[in-house]
Length: 579
Image 1 (tube, rainbow, N blue to C red):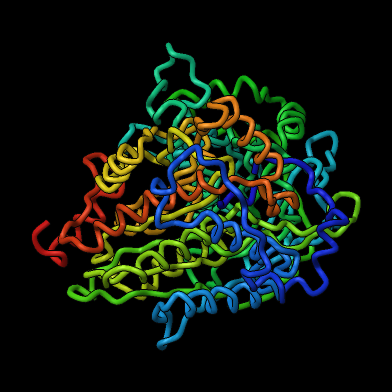
Image 2 (image 1 turned 30 degrees about the vertical axis):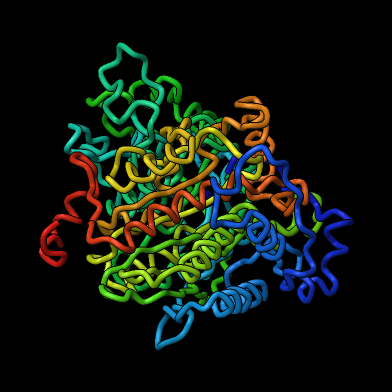
């Protein structure tokens, strides 16, 4: 699941038992026969998750999360091994190639940048200069293909939440000139911290984050307005993750290789609350008071008096081609209509922790679990009658770097998006066993979500809206580029709430999620023989059931009135004929 920033704890060193797997693991990892079966108690009928196999899912996660795959970073040796393994699985299942030129892959051109130690990083005031430290006080990267970041005495402008939403009667910018300046934002939406009696309360969904609250939107808005840089004031509640998560990528950034217009800001990143408070105070401003003012529609940007930001830092730039892996079953009657299942194969690769130890961020659950689900659904489709519509099985690259693989596909589709009936995305499935509930991310957006809720009821489970909508999970996974292109979507993420487990109820589900969040994006997201994968299999079976029905139907799921994605889909209605 995408959050290059996460619920963050220090990256843990590779343990001895993990290191012991490195030598010669690849050979045994790709052999399912080398994996010992897991014995499950008979507290739930296998028919609940049939035809999905929890054991095969566990086998796949063990392979993908192994040391041999080195954390599956795009452009690394781990990518080559991952892609080769995925193609092998697709072939074994009996899929057809769904990529470019009759092959299994789609090239995704990426630019990789890594910011080095700054030679200069400061804010100069009238009477003194405040030195800042990368990682401790600020964390910044660049998506520009430059070999050096040089900013000399750029004014800092506080733009509140940085939201321009005419449909909600809100504009934080008031035509301020940001050209050549550093825009300083608050994270989340203007109503996130609002009291019930404030006028803004509920205007942006209350605790449910809108896209305006995402850090990606704020960077995009800063670029649209000509800012040279964008810094977001970090707070754990508003961001939904701690500072240790912000700094975890180590100064590196990936983006789609691009040139010409629509360039991102030169510098984008975060400033810690203590550092921001100090900067504002030395400029004679009260940041806590400005936070309150920013919750008013009348708020106007504030230029920090006599505060000038300077930066000089080297940048390493490289270009690479990563790969989406695509397989399909061509429809028997309507091959130009598509149902898509997807998950991302990438994780965070290898890096060093704060003690200088080499670690592998294995990504066994994020998103080895989703890839395992895609493979199981592909097997189930292949074992049955040929679908009437084409079914696509996608393993995306660079999700953790900004949904880049799925975004590239959405811009360069291998099947028409206007005739893609739905996209089903799996990202972080729970390993704690069968549950009484399942959570829908972004509930209420489209009709195919209702179909999933009905299927859950037939499983004897209840579908609930995500329990922590302030985290903005709907904007953090590979379904989003498809939603923005108008394709109805379903995203299942078991981080969206506490599972009500058959064994232990909600308290046990809460413990599983809290324990997992310690390892989210960290080295300890590694395969465990103690997992009970039946809960994940239940969720995968849900999507298979609904997707299979769609693959044998003439139905076109629809966005619900008021959805921000409905207008895009409506624009291509004629292509689909009568809906």
